[in-house]
Amino acid sequence: MLTTRLSGLGDLAGTPTLASIQQVPVDLDERAFLFPAGKPLTRLVFCPAGRTIQVDAVFAFNASRAAPRLFTLELEDARLLARTIVDAVFLARTQHAITETMRVAVEVLTNGYRLHVGELDGGMDLYFGTASVWRVCQGLLRAVDALSPVETN
Image (cartoon, rainbow, N blue to C red; front, side, top):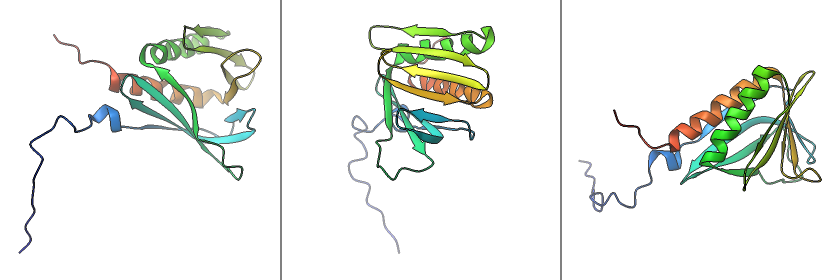
């Protein structure tokens, strides 16, 4: 006879919420790259935690052991970035998302899109094909939705 002891489960105050443990993976196509690291990307993973969204990368190869964490976005910055990506795609022109904690340029290129994250003289460039940019935006908005407060009627 198998018995299970369930002690300590009455205190749910220390239990993490679904939003804090949920991850939103986004598969990318063969035209996704990260520079200056010079690595092809196979997936982005949006990790909602608290009031931020951490953006991690899965590399096609990583012999140099580069860290997977690309950057972290505040909730409102993530919402603005998603809107900026949608604007760039629909308007077919470069858009900027600039706040106190984020500087991102979304550039429209002939064969896809470039997200420049950080200052002009540094930062990182993420290149995406046209099909992948929609998946990135959908994944980012899913992560934003997981952290957003529940609206009442």
